[in-house]
Length: 281
Image (cartoon, rainbow, N blue to C red; front, side, top):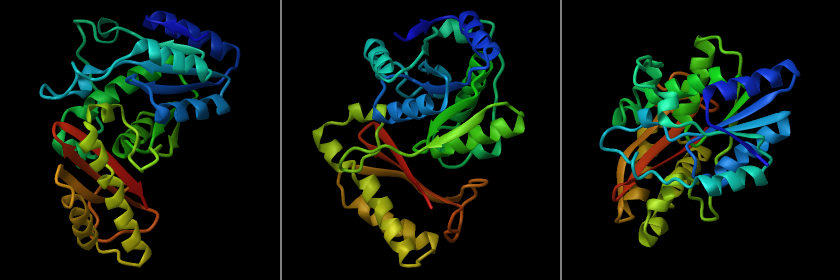
């Protein structure tokens, strides 16, 4: 049985006892509505640690006023069963008042890395991410924390926060999990209707086109981006938010792909649903 903990004090007490017993804690932060992508993180944490903690908290700070906080999919009972089936020891499931009491006024921001890519479309998003992740790190005191590469900018930002603030936690990047047709798994995929879902594969097809060009030693960013746009624009329901080629070190835009140091990322709308995907070169 996975123990469900609702309060910060109880979670701290659990972690304190585990650390005193010299047990490693693997931590997977989530907003719930778990899918195979989350489960792959949990399974990796399970294989590398004595104790696995999963947090489930739909963080309001990550959502702008016009975004989908109120409609974001939630199903705690299903999440609890999946956690138990995958060997999770503790589910940290706090309420909003527990994490952000009325007197709350402290925020954490990784300044430059939060501005490009997702930051252009969602300028307050990463301040919400880094604030909640730092709070969770301080509460749970994990040995290792597991993040998917699908949220590439988030992963890069959190690694930078850990480095800059001298946090004693190892960040473990995990590969993107995909459906059989290549669509990256996401809790937001449930918003897609049947036709949108069939066309959403265009994100992966655009990335495959980029890889095909790079394998042919075509490294010019504009050439790659234009070819990716051509792929996506051939799908009538797809509306491009951005396609970008950036350095994995500082997220600055690159005129040419640098092998081993490049992130190709994109965001595409299907109706009101916004999907992201990426490829690390």
